[in-house]
Image (cartoon, rainbow, N blue to C red):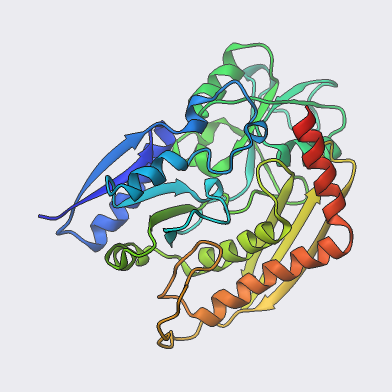
Amino acid sequence: MRVIRVGTRKSQLARIQTDSVVAMLKAFYPGLQFEIVAMSTTGDKILDTALSKIGEKSLFTKELEHALEKNEVDLVVHSLKDLPTVLPPGFTIGAICKRENPYDAVVFHPKFVGKTLETLPEKSVVGTSSLRRAAQLQRKFPHLEFKSIRGNLNTRLRKLDELQEFSAIILAAAGLQRMGWQHRVGQILHPEECMYAVGQGALGVEVRAKDQDMLDLVGVLHDPETLLRCIAERAFLRHLEGGCSVPVAVHTAMKDGQLYLTGGVWSLDGSDSMQETMQATIRVTAQQEDGPEDDPQLVGITARNIPREAQLAAENLGISLASLLLNKGAKNILDVARQLNDAH
């Protein structure tokens, strides 16, 4: 029986996410066996520094890609938002699974259960490891203070509950759902309060770009709507040259053949911001046979079973929206945010 080796980070959430992908693959391929190979990444080891300060794009992916390159694993499961928009040569995202709730959630300290961010006392400290969340929420809730909190979900929840330092913390709703901790969610943040990170809530399966066998194997997991939304989001981020060190956020929706993309950039304190919405018509018709293209990848993703025309329209939408913001002066906001972040 053939054994497929699946790489993952060691955290409980990463293992749960990987198990869910393996379960989907097993349903498609009952004749295959899967072996899970768990490893620690740089991002798991450096816990005393804010992510945006470490200055390394592939914080949670490098070690896993190394194992993929050395043929120690056949595929790797990631949170899509951890994967940079430009992957190292030789790798590609071969599947993007159906997205879960992409929004951010607020978990309150037990003594503040029943509150919202709006009703927390003046100068309450809210923990988040994300510049994107802090910038948007500082603008919306000026009475609160935002402070970095690092560690996996278990660690962050423990810090919230046991230290008297934080009144609340902000986490991705999808992670809390996957861990079975929905009961801790005190508030879901909607786009008008806090737009989400590129790719948030979706899982990506990374494989060797030339491993056609694996690309075919995992390609069945592509969720067309999630894929097209995430191509647009990733193209927007890539064209802005954003990353962990600047506050960039998005919101996407598919409705009646239209893909809507809202994207925004913020200064670190949220005082300066710019956001716009654009839409594109996406036709997901029956797949025409593609010619043997040199590089089928778009923003690091290979999806031969989804119409190319639809993928290009989604990528174009992301690039167009980024160009619109750059023409209106977004580059200045991002450059200042980058410099300030580097200087701290």
